[in-house]
Image 1 (cartoon, helix red, strand yellow):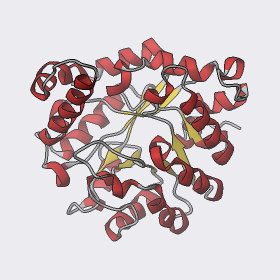
Image 2 (cartoon, one colour; image 1 turned 45 degrees about the vertical axis):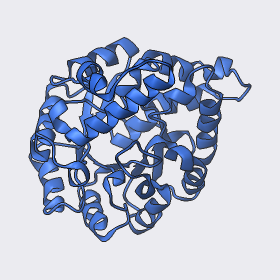
Image 3 (cartoon, helix red, strand yellow; image 1 turned 120 degrees about the horizontal axis):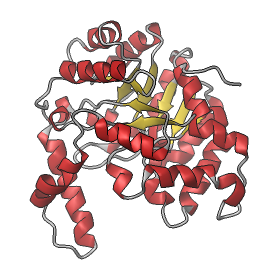
Image 4 (cartoon, rainbow, N blue to C red; image 1 turned 45 degrees about the horizontal axis):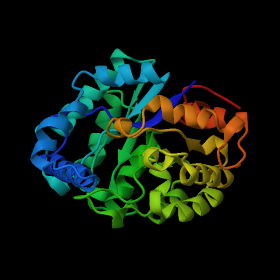
Length: 313
């Protein structure tokens, strides 16, 4: 089984216009660094719509092409930071619940909410009870600390409802704020909610050394390497060493494959990312050892166990 433990299905109306403007500016800067005269307006009009997937069909197609059995869909609440999008948070999560119901063997959908929102705890309960959502995604880059008083109230509901929790860790693109995303702010939660399973996204990016030390000391902390495709291209030495370090500190049952799709598919196809990881036991290009059993955990069994999709040992 291959599980993408961290991905997104992108609908234009689910994100604030300020997010799209910031992303267009980022893409344009990358193009300009490559010597291409591309404006943010051109990116917004001609490139970003390629990611839009209002029926989830592009997601399912990409899964089939890469051999991904199950994808975990993570919505994002940037509204308090960037302005609310066209589609309400309730409409977004209701839509995700319906998509999960349509493809129950392929998709696992989470809810999301900025803990500072009025009625945040009730929204999480509603997400579970009415829409059947199966986990909680928090993005502190919107402007809150994961160990804030408001976050704790949401964590209490997540623990009560036995939800898996995914929290963005690591640096984040403009116009969101990275300072809230240091994984150290998960430490209080891991201690005060020992029954809660918390997935720190992206190996913590630039804070991965600190995250690894936490992984070695907090058994309810998990991580994924979604978004590491840029480091995995061209032989991928930095990615391969980062994966080896994570496995050494967390252990294979707590490290998950993820794509952070769809934005990174243009940089590295999901199939190529999976092949790189799958081939590491036989041909790690930098002489770093991996076992077949470790890769089995990483590519699917660990996340499936985390989500309760199967009981593996």
